[in-house]
Length: 160
Image 1 (cartoon, one colour):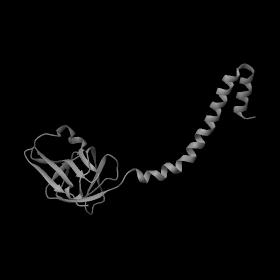
Image 2 (tube, rainbow, N blue to C red; image 1 turned 45 degrees about the vertical axis):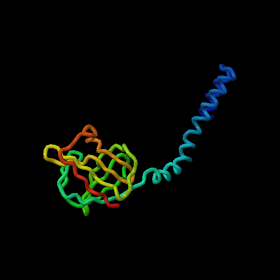
Image 3 (cartoon, rainbow, N blue to C red; image 1 turned 135 degrees about the horizontal axis):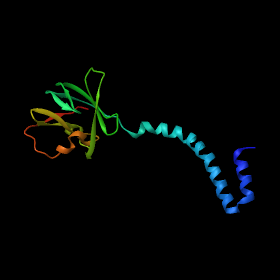
Image 4 (cartoon, rainbow, N blue to C red; image 1 turned 60 degrees about the horizontal axis):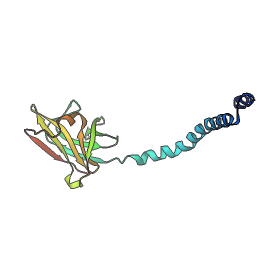
């Protein structure tokens, strides 16, 4: 005899019909929850690819800069938005990339207006913002400096 049947039989002798119906519904829910999860899993997995649009761009940055506490040399970079709330940044030809955490704050811009913004502080340039086709984003680590006037601010166009 199955556990659920024994459970219901014991309750019949000591419970009223409302309590019995409640227990029966609980038992049915316990059986259906795993089944529903199994049936919905393929649907959830197939929808993962649609959740985030991956956009790739490139930029030729003619100066050394800092992002995520790391120094990056001047050069040609590939950027992609493969991860939510971040930007993947790597030198062209390199395999390793660095994820830069970002906060979205504005509407998308046209491809022709897409750019990276750098602010100069203490003689170093820091990646502060990205204006792209997925929206305007500020680097999370630079959020506290947003709106500050920089001695020198540089812009580098993005190419899609």
